[in-house]
Image (cartoon, rainbow, N blue to C red):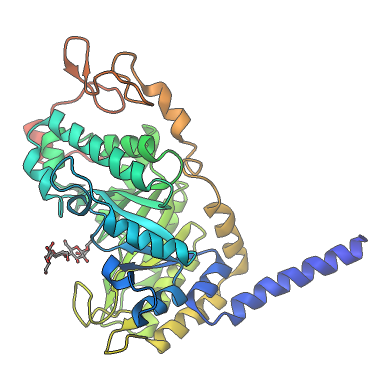
Length: 404
Ligand code: G3I
């Protein structure tokens, strides 16, 4: 082939891909053109009938799903040691049949984790229950989930939240959850810390940022940060964009994981999407409000879908989002595609093989070791990284624990 014909072909294929960004008529086609996952929370009972009006809209418009509740602790392990995957499996079946990716929400959270809360009474029971849960649920879903919310809502203001996991295990429950997750799912999925209220640059997001830096220093295998984005109309786009960027400077993925915008106008949706599109490290944009009829915050959720007797997409908002994606900077979209294609662990240079050397001989918690999990030598307890624990002190409970 001549050089001229090669460049003619290149020009043709470039104009074809630009044309697909310009001419897309659905959210998912527009999102694919800019390298974005566009998702929606759902429940199995809403997609079990894949030809219902609701499911039809979901598969036409979105390329990612997440279980609103069914993959949380109480939805997957209840009582302790009894696992149930039917909800997540059903949503995955729907997703796979329609070429959609899936988020996993979530392993460790204070809420909807009653069985764990009732059974954990010290560090050993805490770590054991955490490990068994992550190994079983993560093991079951590990080839099916792209992004895992390993930790959900663990920061309160500028401090670590007090919750039953932390009180019983100690502050390093965070590190252990990530390490256990990497061990359970390998490099099949990206590991996230997901939280609300840190969407723009503020005290909370700065705490989240400092935690992420500390994890990277300590080789804790974090791949991404979930900004939940439970917002109200009129938020500041530039503030959220700047926050996304600073996590990108650490090499971290950002996913906007639980978007709802109370009393949203179309311009609110496009502002949030534009904050994402401006940053190559913003890889997923997921709405939490299923529809006006079944959002956790009620019918003023600003959802993208209206559920009347026949559910319908909100055409004005959806068209505005498609238009915003068509206007995205192609150079940033290309960089996003390249960035998103890096495997888990790759973004920070931390991956499964590199955490293996952290193991200790007799307290080996990696691989398939059959040694007792949480005891070494004289019965001292270690965590998943093989470290001797720091017993949480009274002052730890006063929350002065985040990195300066
Ligand atoms: O489990 C019972 C079920 O047995 C019963 O039949 C049903 C009847 O109402 O209630 C069920 O529990 C409800 C559960 O959702 C499952 O439907 C709870 O009462 C209800 O409080 C729970 O709400 C969920 C909430 O998390 C719990 O904190 C919402 O649907 C869900 O949207 C919301 O999602 C959270 C994210 O996970 C984390 N970020 C915040 C976000 C909004 O709160």
